[in-house]
Image (cartoon, rainbow, N blue to C red; front, side, top):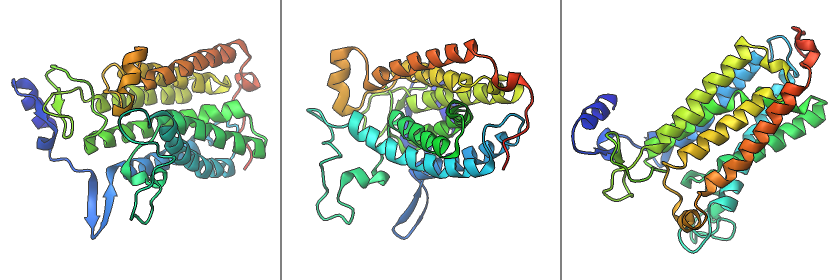
Length: 303
């Protein structure tokens, strides 16, 4: 695929997504398809759990393995439920596009309520964040943990999983970008014959890989984890800025195109502005307070 991208980028013709030989599923057995989008969620969550389990073994952990196990379960629910409800609330409805998922039913289907049809796609990152915060709040309250420090540990593991999700969007040929004449512009199925930014890859790189490298480095190579709120604040600002910038290259959802034209910003950008503001406030709070335990290498939380 990379060789085809390079060869096509060097020519005058735009890249056609269909020429990349991609398909939305890894394998098909009868009527069952293992889709890359589902696989991205699964692999991302498992990698996050694995890395969190390594993090809590390092000095200064605010939680034990049993808390990580609880977070794995409840944050998974938070991502799925919050992401789906957020998509239904923020990204559907309007005069054009899809009707509201809250009220629309598909006649003749075993699962007729469209809100439950996760395999059809449609997840909101901002809704997923709300769901994860609710899960963290529940686990921290029940386990009498420092909520802000738990948020720090969870935030380090989000960007890499996010990157996998955006790569899956690209493999599915969905959520394409705005029309462009850059050498790597691509013609996506369902988007006409106009070459567009592969904005899914921009998001995977900026909001995913780059942010993941930054927060993982800060956790393992600095004492950032001893300042409650610093890591989650940096993550929130980085994700908010990355999403705001990438929205200039991403085509707005069809049902929200009029909203973007009328307000000057897309729904994703409006939702990112409070994220950036909150992240800056949390960073300032973290830097004004003394490090947890004086910044000393404390023992891990008892199991």
